[in-house]
Image (cartoon, rainbow, N blue to C red; front, side, top):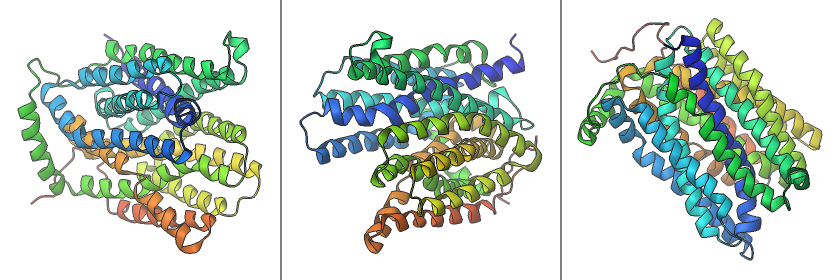
Length: 421
């Protein structure tokens, strides 16, 4: 029988595995390749529109089905099976991007939507398995360990992929375009290979034989909507998380565009993205240790305070070296706020309904970066100054921190209790 350490490491390796997709594909090469290769000849505004449609459609599909899928998986004890299904839904189309020809933007969009749904859907069940590999006593450090491995694994493969595009001849490739296409294949293989330990070593607690019931899942989903209203800490946390993670995700999504708007070289921005990945590895581990001693809420407060400083500094930024330094600072706290949010939420929810409740958690993550960009855009229009527009994100951090104050966190090992009389 595998030890606790081996099960935890096997679970965390899935973060190492899937982060290659979020780093190389989502944040790195797909947006650029979509514009410059698959949408060649199209207007810039048109390619931007269809890329936005692809991202929005994938997020909408996850939002619509995440809670129901989680409820079904919890009813049948099928979290690993659903994780495997969605992982393959992400892996296969990611590899398929290699075969998409120049100008075939519609095929690339379809594969990207399917892969992104697979990626996001698998995270629902991966997060839910956190409660199957650890208990309340070390849940913060285990969650942080997963995010840390994700930063390291995603950054390592991304660094290799960037090297492939900068020196394709060294890797036996004809040009940068071929290097990018092969990068998609490497992501798929990486994702597949490093997912295997989880399926071999992690066991679901409470897993039971029997058919996975859609009807039972629907009944459970309705019951959970009512239950969230009674579980006041869960409801308050989801509201707080929605606000502050919206600000965090807006910074993640806007950083490269903001740097380009200031006239910084695209190569410098790629290097900055790599810095975030490698700084995020040890920083996430440190945040996990801090949470053990001081609690996850204080760790989240610390991260939000740093993000507040980042936003204020970014409005005054003039030089590329400042962008590098800001990337390092963001790397120090980004993994921390993500991992501690996951572990704090896991403390609050009923363990036997973990997949379903993490479905709601991931919905809030998918709705994130909706209000933030709207605030930034409106402020930019109203003031005529894109630098000042970033200050609107301080509202999101402030509201999130204020609501988080009201969340009562159970002691380690204490069961989640309803606030209902």
